Each structure stands twice: as C-alpha cells, then as structure tokens.
Length: 371
Image (cartoon, rainbow, N blue to C red; front, side, top):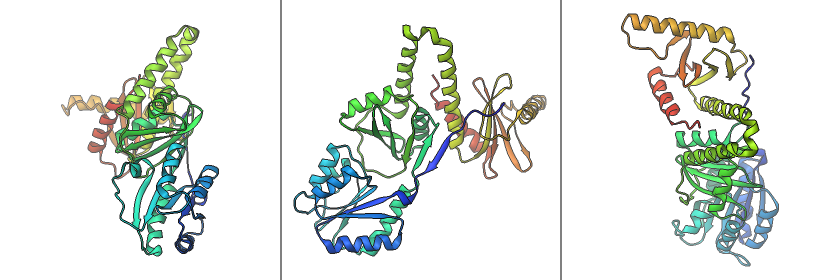
C-alpha cells in the first residue's frame, strides 16, 4: 500500500523580500539603502521621507521589513505605527531616533517593533544586523497539506516563538506565539476576541500555513493556550457532526476524524530531528502512511517479527518488558513503537540516543490531543 501522507513544505526565498526605509533625513536614507544593497543585492529597497507616503506604500505593496524614524513631518513615526496597528498591518520594524526611547512603551510592543537604534549610528554596522534578521525571515516556511491543529500542538510542545500567517475566515490573520504560548491573534477589522472565535471555528479547514520564527515583542492578550484552542475546535467540529444534517454521513465523519488523527501523528514524527523516516500501520499490520515510498510491507513485517521475538526473549530472561525494541540494521537504529491502535516503525539518525529519544517521544505522545 502506498503512503498517503504527503506534506509540502517550501521556503520563501530572500529574493522576495523588500525593505522600506522611512526618514526625512535623505542622507541617512541613501546611506542605509547603499549599504543594504552592498551587503545583499537580492533585497529590494524602497524609501520614503514622511509617514503619510510610507503608509500609502505599505497599504499597496508587500513590505517585509520597515526601518522607521520617529521624528518626521506630515505624519511622524508613532502616528504611522498607530495607523498600521489599526489596519492590522504587522511587520518587523526597527526604530531609529535622535533621542532615547522608552522601549517598554505599550505601543512598541503592539506595533511590531523588534529593535531600537539611536542616532548617530554607523550604517555599515547596522545593516549587518538587518541582514541577519532578513535572513531569518528568509527561512519562513510555507506549508501545505499540514493541519493547523497539528502545527499548533507542535509549536506548544516544542516551545517555539514566532508568527503563523493563515487564512482565518475570509482574511489573512496572524497568530503570535512565544515559547509555545499563545500571545495574540490579529485579523483585519476584528477585535482580539472576534479573531480568536473565528480562528477556532475555522481551525480544521484546509489551508496553507506560513510560519516564521521571529522574536516579536507581542504581549499576552489571550488566556487560552494553543492546545486548548485545538480542543475547543475539536469539540465544535464534533458538535457539527452530531447535528441532524450530518447524521447521514456518520461513517464518513469517522473516516475524516481518523485521517486527522493520522495526520497529527505523522506531522509530529516529521518534526523530530532524530527521525530519518517512519511508517505507521494499524493493529492488523496494514500500512496507513509512511514518510518514504521505500517503506513497504516487507520492512513492516520484518520489524514486527523482530519486535515479537525480542519481547519473548526479554520476558524469558527477565530483562523487563520491552514494549519497544531497538536494533541496528545497516548502521541504522530502528525503533518499533506502539501508540493506541497504531504500530509505528521509526528509523533514527545515528546521533539519536535511544533512552533520551524514547522519553521525549513518550512525553510528546502523552500530550497529543486526539479527540
């Protein structure tokens, strides 16, 4: 049986990144632009000398990074930040200013500011930091065929920091998380509470996910955890399935639910750096999904056979009950793992330490939400 699970994961390249410099000091603008292009010619650099013109650019074009002066005519930097916040336009921003700035002001945490630079500064040194930040943005993952509930569970378990950009309702929304904790959700023209509700209601819809691991300064505005969001979304979905209009399709719904469970497990295994490839089978020994077409029934049956034999010998020699057997095959470590009604065969990397990995795997599976 061929593997059914095929996640598609691509990188957003640095060629697509655009930097906007906004300052009424034309010499600073030109110096920054010159040095940015000198360090990486793949960037597109746009410039503006007042906040109002910059806002027009930000509303019409895709800007990935903003360098912003606070003291400007027509519309100053703080006013521009407030407009961006109202319009739910979020992007990483470096503030440059003649005076010392109170970095703990609420506005700077809400509006996307990630760093502050006091004038005068050396443009050559500043652009090195900008390039490093842009390179991190260039590692953004665009993920298809990868369930958002599974992604959110992995973020919480792995304690990641960053931003998910995903379709929420009819709009693109941003989900901010820090060290695995849900911080905020922004969707155009929706309050935080409305955005949270809309996100939960559409959590299981098929969608593309863009994720970037950026150290934003967002403060916590939502008490619910990512895992609690998944559980609530699952509860709402189950209620919809039990409604009268869905009673004629109960069997199909069960199949969909089983597929979701399988997807969550497969996504978890794909995220583990210790795992080179894997196969998931049911209790009858039928392959449900695999990370490689090279995995087949022969490998599965041979693994299960050795697993059973190992358990038998382990009991006879009082070696403890080996619920999982690991052995070496052509310099590869193979782990046979039983989870609920699934049999999971894992080929591990050479550097994987069995006891530590087994403990980690047990913890992750114990925390999975499979409703």
